[in-house]
Image (cartoon, rainbow, N blue to C red):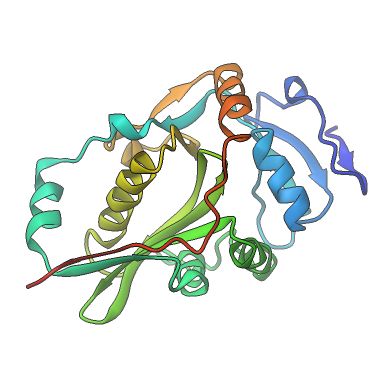
Length: 232
């Protein structure tokens, strides 16, 4: 049995998280901005499918990207320099979440429910959640969103309607975070896609120690102002 959260913001000790499924820690509670921010600051994130109770996770190991370790494949580097596009931050957060929530590969639904979108939309309006958007031919072609606390960024989800659009937005976001003094990007669970960009796994204990140092640092509140254009 996993603990059921009450009305307080306290989470169980991370040592109680299950090994299978990896990192499942607790259920219940709510998605209020205060609780979600408290969770992220402790290395915990919500992930659940529609119809399920809210589930809270802290996997071990943890997939992360150190911004200075970003690897850009040669083929993508050519795209970044030559393909016409426009990258902006925080100008279409709700539309980015909508794109991330759209069914993929014939799947009927994604985990990004209306409840999740409402919660992260409130966090965006509060200056905590951010979107990186890639625009092509005047249309939103792809992007991603996540949470920033102190000098820590927590990536959540990305989508692309045109080839490489989410990758372009991702590279610009990582470079921006590095310039702003962010030292770590949380990628949550391992994927080959993120590994190709230099992300790697670290032990949860190391991840938490880094959070304790990075989250209390000066917060860069949103909306973030950023625009970069490559002309055709």
